[in-house]
Each structure stands twice: as structure tokens, then as C-alpha cells.
Length: 340
Image 1 (tube, rainbow, N blue to C red):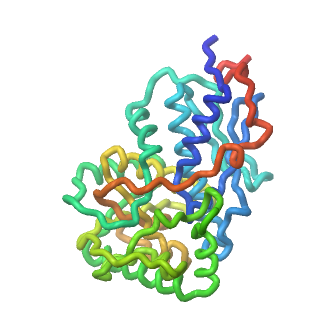
Image 2: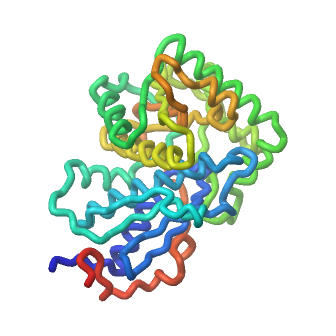
């Protein structure tokens, strides 16, 4: 019987890929546990890493964890498994958001797996101006198809609709920087000296648009006293909206899976991304962001896409802080797929 060892080295590769995913304010709200009896990885939420003011329902937390699940799935395929992902598998364990079963070998390498796996390590959020030519229509079509394959819709508003969404984002940004509870919570996630390996590092922050066209999140206003000088951003930004048909926790997880798949596919084509998700954090503004022309659906993520240098990597917690201690020292003799 063919087997594939799920030893400590393989487990480290899987979890390292998972935690490279983006998360709201780099909160890294995930935790992993391996059940060696069934070769199943449990992906759990870390409630202490939530943002109760900005994200009271845990929608952004679920999206963040969904992104980690996508990376885990890609890494498992690259290592030779045919992973089976189950979302919200146990209604009695609300913090158990997903399981990834590693019981079967993959008998065919899916096209693009190697490129997507490589993109996991190169994908970084870029909050600085983009430059260069418009993104080709063929690449945008590919990104839309990628989202659709993950049960989500990605569309690219233009003209008056794009202007409307940017105005909603600007309104949300005004609220974020003037609401005491919001600004206090956001400030707590900006890293200071000797900060732990989560939260938003100063090196990852970007300037404001000197022309006032793009409402970039103003971390400098939230966390003085080192504001970055304004810079001219692109005059015709490429904006993307990721939406799902439903708006339940399972849909939020699917949105995270689709989001990360889109971001990795974009990275393969040298396209960078940053988040304009301020409006997604205010329920009435997120509802207003829906576009009836796109059919029924719920906006989940608002992105800005373009060409530019790779952004700086953000810190990640060590495996010892995201992996259940009971599975840290996985016996190298433990088999994965084909385990008797």
C-alpha cells in the first residue's frame, strides 16, 4: 500500500504555508492540531486574537482562517496528498472552523500547484502606489474564474460604480479615524518596539494618496507620531470586489479560501494587492456596497490591484505558538495516507 509519511518535517511545511496567509490586522487568529489517528489537521479559531469592536460577528476572523485553509490545501497537494477540506465540521465545537483530512495520496499533480505554492511565500500586502500598465483583461478574467471555482464571485467595478464604492470606503475611513473605540482597537494592533510576532509592523504601513483619490487606511492618523509623507497614487486604480451568495459563517470561510486563491494567482502573474476593506467593517456600508447588477450576493472583500514591487513580509508567530503542543513532536514514523 502506498504511504506518505506525515512526519515533523512535513507538518512544519504544512503549517508554515498555512500561517503565511493574510489576516485582519495581521492578527493570525488560527490554531492547528493534528489527530495522528486519522491524519486530520484541525483548524481552530483563536478568540483572543479577535477584534470585538471592528469585527463583532467574527466575519473577518473567518475570512482570515479561510485564507489559511487554502494555503494548507495547496501545501498538502504539493507534498503529494489529495486533501479533503470540511468547513464547520462539528456544530458542538464552534471554534473548530475546518478540518483537512490527509488520508489519500494524489495520483495526479493539479496544474499550477507548484506556482501557487511558490506564490505563498511571495504574496505580501502592498500599501504603496502602484505603477505600470493596466492589468490585462486576460489576467482579470483568470482571477474571476479562480474565485468562481471557490464558490465566490470577483468583479471589477468601473466608472460611476467604482467611484461610488471608493466614496463608501472614504466614509468608512472617516468613521474609523474619528470613532474612539475603533481607533483605540486599531492602535492596539500596530506594533511598537519589542512587539510579539503579530499585529501590523511599521515597515508594512503605507502613505496616504496626496491627490485624495484613494482612501487608504490611515494608520498614521490612528497611531502617531510618525506619519508617512503623502505620495501620488495611481489615477485609475483597479478595484475588485469579492462576494458570496450567502452571508453565514461558512460563506465567510469560503470567501477567505477564494480570496487567498485569487491573491496567489495574482502573485503568479506579478500582480500586487492591498485591501480597501474599511467599508466592509461597517454593516450598513457593506450592505450598500452590494451591486444589484451582479445579482444576489454579499460583498466580503474590497481589493486594490496593480503592478509594483513586492511588499515587505510581515512577521509570523513560530509554530510552537500556533500548533497544539501535543502534535509538536510528531513521530517521524507516523504515516499519513495509507496509514494502516
